[in-house]
Image (cartoon, rainbow, N blue to C red; front, side, top):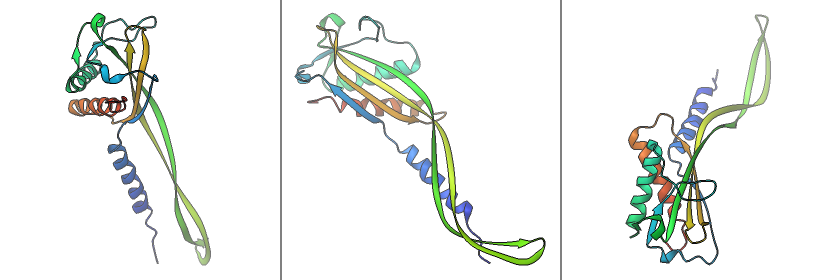
Amino acid sequence: MKKRNYLGSTLMAATALVLSGCASSPKVDADYADGYNFAHIETYAMVSINNDTYAGQPGESLTEQRINDSLRNHLSNRGMQEVAAEQADILVSYSVTSEDKTQVRSYNTGIHHHRGYYRGHHRHAWGYGTGTDIQVRQFTEGQLLIDFVNPQSNMVVWRGVGAKKLKSSPTQQERVETIDQYVDAMLAEVPGW
């Protein structure tokens, strides 16, 4: 008598999903103003988003401090210097959001052979059918939005949006690395950089 390996197929699917979740990198989308010369940017100022203007103060949470540090490091590595907002070639602003999501996946487990018994008698019922395993996974997706704002017009000239599935209960080091992944992937989308 052959036993079907339900557990083996389920474990393989779960392992593939976990590994793909760990290896995921931020999904990045970017847009920019036509004709703006990003190559001329030498100085920047960090500001926070405000409904009326981009003048403001950076946030104080640990996440915001890490984003500020990562942005400063990346911009400094590109040879840019941080200055007061009044002297900056570009204003740099960002916002962070997170959203709980549900992912449902179904897997066809193939054709199966069925054999049954009737009221304790050895009457066999034979048949074939298909099986489907359904997997429901809940996760949190984090999103980082970075804006470059022209200080003369107070208009956004570049916007990057990065989204990534977040690991539950990350270590402090993992939090820093995730933010660096976001910032690195997003700034790579600035035209001419």
